[in-house]
Length: 395
Ligand code: ADP
Ligand code: MG
Image (cartoon, rainbow, N blue to C red):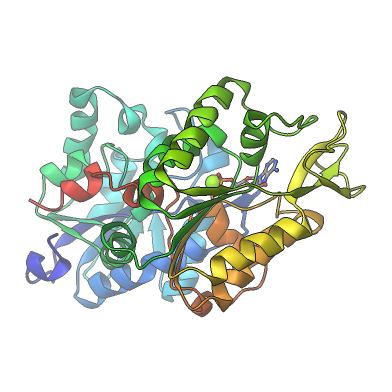
């Protein structure tokens, strides 16, 4: 990949940076600024080089039009604090305000464009539509640095199309992420254990097929465990279940058995009548009450997973084991995180919520081999896929 060095002298040049500032918000309060901090090395480097830095990013899922709920204003404020300098926030994506904000930049100053997903063309499937937005973005700058690792698996205007229109390079974050994750993909030290959890069952079921041929063991927790349990004939009460994926999962279980890959499912789970409830009990997975939902793996499962992780040389983890946002359902996720810290193997944490969980639960980031800022992007790299936002930087 091209690097920032390849861009030459940047003094006085307008450099457009795609960052990943898709941080969790509670109202306008950022509850985890990990992704903003991860963007700092590239931004500081460009600012120190005397560039005029223009950052584009998305936040949440606005519907292709301006929506104050998803304004990047809280991000601009936090970024300013972390950089120790003002971050000008444009009132639009590529309109008059963006143009004026960029025009006002002096060398070593930084501006943030408003949420790129306020413009429907960003995520359009139509290349011409995306291209039109990319043209407008490119007109604001002299060079492009791709550093939003969390979005490099997306063929979007600010990730992919704009790189075709400007001299471009990978930022420090993208370089670090790709190096760490490729190590696990191309030549993992074995045993290679993959821990999967989280809520978006169908999102991750797709990658399991690929991991079955690569990993030695797959540990399944989180919401997706219930689709696996169902596929094995268990009743899962009112737990998160994707009924239409049960057959797919049955196929995976058979495939794994044939390939000699062990799929380890939880043996117990914490159940409660509803999400917000603290009225929970631990039950075996063959005794989930019909009117209760599983919100975390149980202590026996935590121990089972821990042993598998301690025995591994490479561990990739994506997706919390339970609804860790509530302390009552964070123990399973804590157990896995602790095992990743304690293991002598190289541990990789992927997934926005998993990385946030690690910090929220008070773990020291230095205890892990690599904490990825990307969810989908890290999973796709682990699958060995070619990511459009990476490939475009490799020419
Ligand atoms: P990541 O961002 O790390 O890839 P996901 O976005 O897939 O993870 O999933 C994170 C979410 O999964 C968390 O908000 C968590 O509350 C939820 N989750 C975990 N276990 C369960 C469960 N048993 N039932 C419902 N939601 C769950
Ligand atoms: Mg997530």
